[in-house]
Image (cartoon, rainbow, N blue to C red; front, side, top):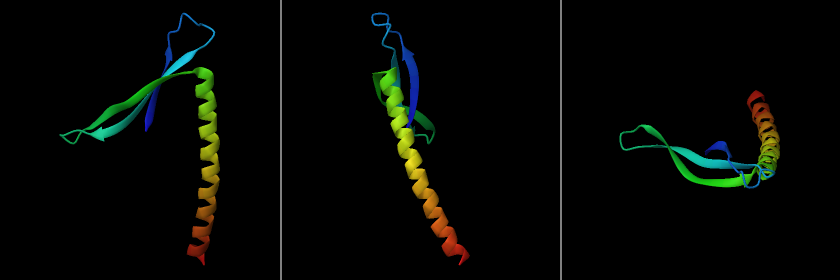
Length: 80
């Protein structure tokens, strides 16, 4: 799932910057062409968005360590 991220004009509370996140995915239409469909959109503060992205990055880095360990095991079996 992809995201389209943009700043939100927020004149009332200039100290709280907001972002608009559109969660999208690519599907095939009736003709077989790829089309981008928006699942939903949300507005969050930029600080919350940064915290969420950092948490996702940490989770993915941990998963990458596991996958690299699997690759070592698979290559050891292949080379044995």
